[in-house]
Image (cartoon, rainbow over all chains, first blue to last red; front, side, top):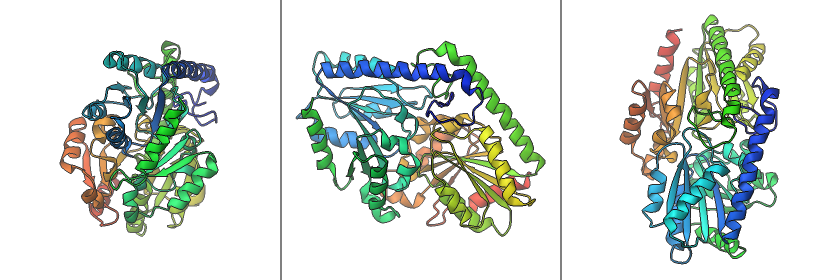
Length: 238
Length: 238
């Protein structure tokens, strides 16, 4: 465990490693306990919680906006928006008529279960007793650190957009290994990039054989029906 | 200071905050001391060190490849390649005939000065006494955590690519505030995105008034001459 970034059990070159390992293990343990509480809370409410992670600009908020357009007359949706600074993304979601709470981490590179717990109670205040079917959690834009923090979600979705390149699964394996669904976003841009869809699928599946993969474009609509169906199947299991 | 991600002095919601703050301050202090040593080492060698940070897939390695094509007959270049896993990027650089050392962090989300120190000595073994003019350090793909770690570089360059969106400076201010140069990459893709170059320039300059900004495309060549000139001006000051 690195005592500054806290991201991994493998040793790297920070000093004072042994001095802080117990503290960080207790922190991740505290996060895990809070995650279990969150998940129990969501289960008690019969609600599906989805944690969406990706690099900055991969299209998390746009995917949410498009999904809301399709689903908002059928199901009840709430959103927790993670960002380091600004509440631009929560404003985009609220503009769709969907309750959203912005969680700004003040510099930190990921959400944690304690923030989700507080954020969800803020969201409940906006609901006036209405029950949610789905809670979307949009994590901070970062393909590394959020992979290490269970938020109590039922499904973790990782987005990789075509402009980022097909080599991302092998370079950022933890995000792939801890997710249930990989969404390859911005597929409309494939003609402009040297992006090999077969290769990214193969590499991702090698890291996580049970990973579902959907190729999408919010511009052309490719894969959107499959993504919505995926959500509905998971929703039925709640 | 967050004791898991270590990224910021502002409080966020992890537990045990007070228990670890001293440890993390000592870690960042240890990094800072190692950074000062690295910089002194680079100064003694009369070498310019450049730390390049960005999200995954913003085009750091491609920018390096193109810069090497232009500069390799004029100046002596070495590269330290940061990645979480794989040595794909160092292989791309070596294919250009340039000495490169891959630093894999084993899960950690950023390079630190101690890794740079070790990596630079490995690089020196490849040089057989040859002097370097420029050392490029390509950081781990992450727009958050690398901003907090001085590596001993003389110039920090942050890349933001057009597909990521023009809202990235306000959402990831630390990377902007600690850099000397912002490269807006993949400008050839502006026609396909709602990307406002004036807005990103204005937002970035508001955060860091002394920031230089260059709009580039390695496909059309836009801005590449300005970037090479920027390097040469900084090189002359060594």
